[in-house]
Image (tube, rainbow over all chains, first blue to last red; front, side, top):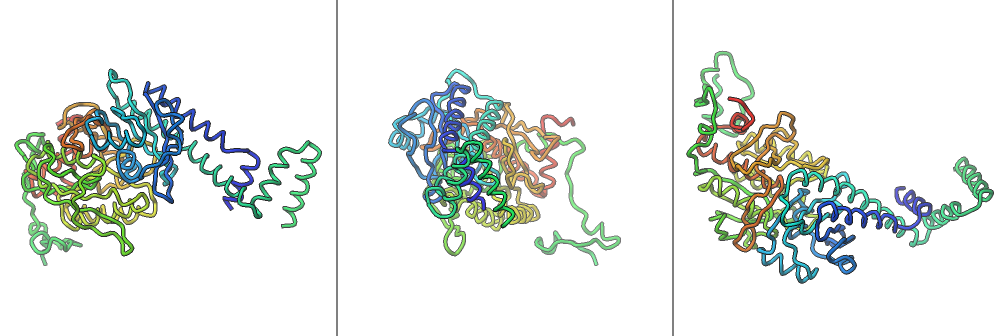
Length: 208
Length: 276
């Protein structure tokens, strides 16, 4: 039933592009607020147990989206699994981390803030903010701010996932697809046709 | 019939107390009229106390961690969670950081690492529960859990394990969340839950008059042990938690007779914001 609703909603709302834009806006804002070199959102792919770069602002933007790495190791993996936010500096001293970062992203951050993206009991992914200015001391108020951003990013990520599931249902053919196409056409129709379509739907509702 | 549970079988609880039997369970107490930090942990080293770090593993031979008596890993298999000896060290750096904080506060504790990270994302909650159950069975004095789960299906089991630990005199010290989410086990009354304060004093704790977060400990810009034998600066409730675990180890090494309830009371009375 949730797929049906999502499919119909997608027919009305349109593409997942707007949710992707919302996510991108969130990482851009996070980067600006924390005066950081980069900010990114990783989406958890539960099937492959990998974290996927979903939105990137600053360093690496444009190249990293779509890149993947294992979801149960490293700082991001720890944050994802334990649901605990974490801020670490001087990461360049961690040679294994530096090597892996250099190999996978080409950029070795000095420090990072990582926070889980939670939607009720689900962990959807991780928000990371890389390299705040060296001269500013970190405070717990910033940690709380990071949590607020994570909340916003989690909502955007949940919407994006829902839209993608809806799109998959649409493109999959079958009953759901035809129903969604109907909703889409209804949305596009002129006033007279839409009123007729809605009357037909109401009649169908009574019949069912 | 007199009931003297502590002299017969530690596992057998006393369900009732017959008339006039109060004298037979008289407990020795050195609890002072005014409890100070000095009484609580002054001169203590953690000697004789066993502390378990349930985390990402602990790097072996790290100079800031010292000897780790045993390292095991909890992994999910088709037959359930298996806990076995493990030499893969730390998959993140976080467990090493926690172990280093505990070692710095309580240099003579016995440290054991239970790695629950690396079981894959979907196996992680099961590994966490399996690792915790193993640690409670091993009878550690203190278990440091800088982690939590949001999965509601595990809450009942986790609650049961937290209570089991409490009655077996194992202190579970767990990180609170600074995000508006329902997560566990830190919300349970049978654990010691920890958030962060901004003071650099590793011994300073604050009692929270508005739980569920019960104590605040050092969690901001902490110099912690990390992978590769070095150290980094880190922030998070997950680093405040081992500070309280270390203090619990100190208190227990000096006052072996204290129950988790009493250790929590001692922490409260030794808090920087509690007038004595």
